[in-house]
Image (cartoon, rainbow over all chains, first blue to last red; front, side, top):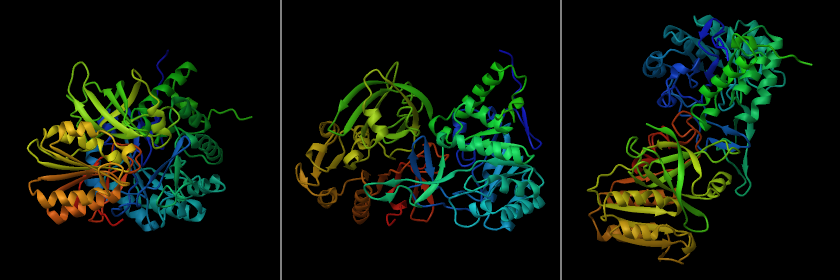
Length: 305
Length: 259
């Protein structure tokens, strides 16, 4: 088999391969860094940060569902300053794109975090307007085009590194939000965040999650992700980090054909810590078997009926 | 450091209607990675179940060419049902060692308090302190008992309690615990594993008698390594810690028992 060029470019951020790990599934890299060198990855979307430390939601936070999991972690994180001081230096010892994920209660908070993280020289900022597990901000910004645009604008004004906006699938028409965010100046889009779901214990009649509902991820959501990446790629001219249920090379290839230039692996890490590497290798094999010189040739290659 | 290891099941024993004991060949997980009883292994339970199941380690043995670890689990749902159907010779995909076990020394005089499926991880602590420990084991009923003979082998004294009176003393373990602590002031630590209400009661009794108490906690878990922050437990100081990375064993004084 011929050697395929795996390198990709996401809004000017160069990556040695298109595989990123998804925010909230990989911490700041320390835990899975025990299993393999993080240099194997194209990039890392770090655990979602807020301006101040958050303890997150009460447990239980996890419920298993058919080929998926629900979570309601609620953005537990040490705060942006602690990330910059304690986690970022460690990550910077590695050769991979460092993407900081941020959530704010107000547009101003997004602005402050963008300034701090730009000054700390992360490679990219992923603006989370789609967390289903927090009351203020989060999903509220992601479901209304004008609010999504406002947050994007503020982020762009305060960031000196590329800004990627993470979209929620919990909307009627994701292209509406995508267009609003693109018009407001976003450099890239990432999608999908988790789908809101619920699981009930039929004996206690209590929801498994203490917050009653949570975000669904895992293989169950892959077809939704492929469809939404395809819709967004058709509607706006921005590079896309596609994610949602990716567990093998074929899944990543589907998202790329739908229009993604990079792909994130998330929940699959919980099943197999090596999942991102296996997805990368599987994807390379597919590209090679299809006679492609570079994996980026897959992007947008779907032939819709 | 945790590793991924394909582990062969070398021995299976059914302990009661719901509980199974598996002895696994764990490569060099004991000698090289320091696996100890009280830590847990995160086990893949078939293709159909996405998440691994965290199972506590009951006993470990250094051996060649393979170290062994004994795990005990109850069938609680689909994943553990799949696990219970495995045969000797089957291989399991295991992540481990994970979590922090009990902080003890071989000189400690331990008072071990186990309830139900919380009984197994304390056995290794009894083994480690060589016949000095006292154990109080509580079960719902006689037919749910497990490992009682093993405890007799490794402990100085073993007291049994059952919720329905069908075995040992009728009632919860804390009454028995009080009687023991009233007479014997020589314990250096109380180690507890079991249902949360039991842990709370034992922590309270331990505090009354001024004996340091360590509790092993459970929570619904995803990654098992500290990355997803799923298995949160609330601490008395208002912070959240995680069973997989900070625990499963915590100082009873650190835990918020009122949630």
